[in-house]
Length: 149
Image 1 (cartoon, rainbow, N blue to C red):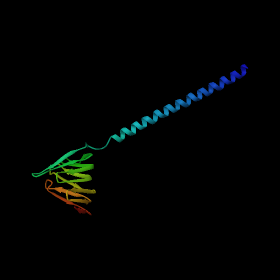
Image 2: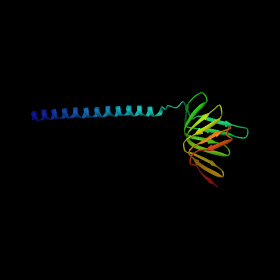
Image 3: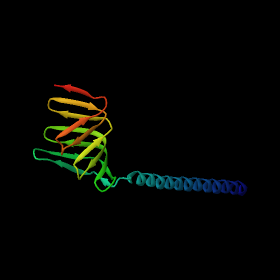
Image 4: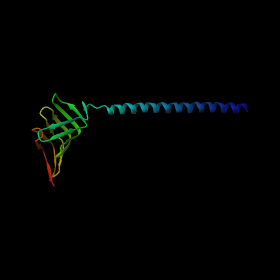
């Protein structure tokens, strides 16, 4: 009878050691995964943008055009590349696009990406635009579609 108890103690001891090792491996692997997820999350938060959520305006005698974007990068002293959800908004119209080069000194803006112009009586979809003369003139480039209401 002591022989059977001795065998059972060995089996129980080895089974217990195996279970403890299994749980230690499981715990350490979860911690390693959490560290990797934390590193990937912090890397995704860092962008190469110089400006986060920039806001500018084009001013002239009769109106103001407000410009917002998700991020921006300085090209030179006067020019800024605005990226992601770029919006030009005034009391009369709004323009939405993805990338714009905005010149702060000359108060001009140029885009070569798909753009959507919306006003009370019309909608224009184009492949780009150029705003100059302090917002008084807008030229649309490429294949443009105009919808008059």
